[in-house]
Amino acid sequence: MVAEGAVLGFEARIDHAALGLHLQAYIDIKLKSGTNTHEFEEIVKTIPGVLEVALLTGNYDGLLRVACKDQAHLLRLIDTLRDRAGVQDTYSRVILHQTPVHAPLSVTE
Image (cartoon, rainbow, N blue to C red):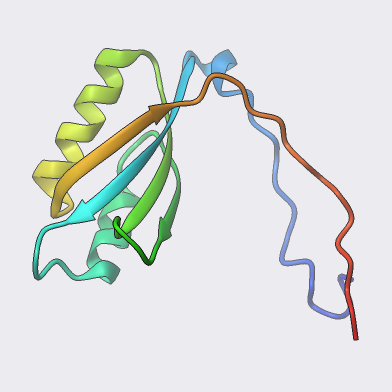
């Protein structure tokens, strides 16, 4: 798979709780009218605690997965998104438990 270019690289698995980041959440993002999605992505990548960003179709423009120390830290992160990243509205969901799935991929020809 490496030779075919399907493997893009290797990453370390991080225990965020060991770093003091005990709360993870998904944040649905609705952007302000006229906000450039590329600029939004570039700004969000600079905000500490943002683990993943995805642009979406549907009711929300994006989805973030974040790691925070606590609820107060999550609130500050959301305020930062609204102040710096052109975010109009958010809908947050705290992750209670997460199980990574590393199932083999089925490749059909």
